[in-house]
Image (cartoon, rainbow, N blue to C red; front, side, top):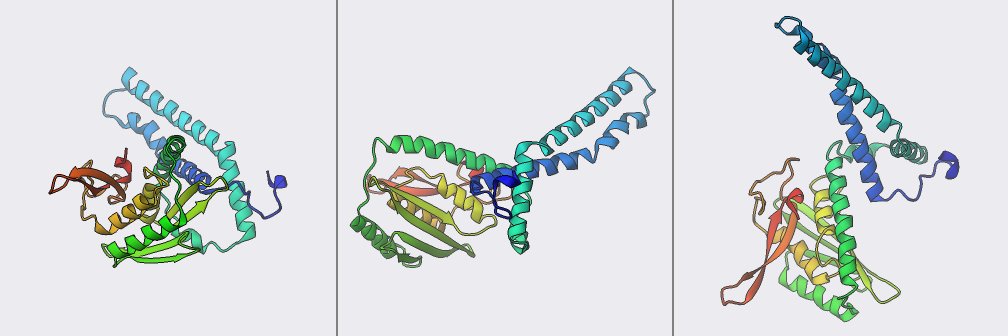
Length: 284
C-alpha cells in the first residue's frame, strides 16, 4: 500500500466517514482485547467450583476454553483484516508527515462504534432525501438567501451571525446552557443551478460531534430557512429530557443533542412549528 502513495503522504480517500469507521474498528479491537484478558479466569472458574468433578463442570470448562479460543481467532482475524491494516498504514503515513500528536489528545477513545452507526444512518437518509429532492427541488436565488439571513438575525438578535461571500459562508455563534456553540454553514452552488447546504458544529469532542451528526441528518437538507431555525432551536429549546425516551442522558452519557420540528395547533387554531429535543440514538 505504501508504494501506491507518495512517501509520507496519507491517501486522499480518507474522508471523515472512513476515519470514523477506522476508529470504530479500533474501538472494537480494544473491547475484544479487554474481554480476552478474562479468558484464563473464565476457563479455570469451573475448576474452583465446590461441586464434585463431573459432566457439568467438564462441560463448563470446555465451553470456556472453546469460547476463549474463538475470541482469540476473531481478534486475530480482525487485526489482520485489510481495513485495520489500512488504518495502521494511514496512521503511519500521517505520522511521517507530521509527528506532532498533541491534537490526538482531543480525540475521545470511545463512542466511535455508535458514531459509525449514526454516520451510516445519515448517509442512508441523505441518499433517500436526494432522491426525493430531485422531484421537488426549489432553486434558492441570492436575494432569497439575503432575506432569510437578515430575517434570522432580526428574530434572534442574541445569536451572532457572521457572513462572507454574499452570505454563502456563514458563521453562527451563541451560548446555550453555558456551552458555546459555533455552526459553520456553506452554501455550495453547483453548475446545474442546484445548491447544497453543508453545515458543521465546530468542535472535536462531544457533544459537538454529536450535534454535527444530528444536524447533518436533518430532513429538508437543502432548505436554508429550516436549517437556520434548527440551529436557533439549540438556543431556544428548553427541554432537558429527550422527547422520545424522557431521559436526560442516553447510554453514552450524552444529553439531547438532536433537534426536530413538529407542527401543532396554535392558540388561534393556526398551525405552529415547535422544536423538540432528542438523543441522537432516539432519532428515527
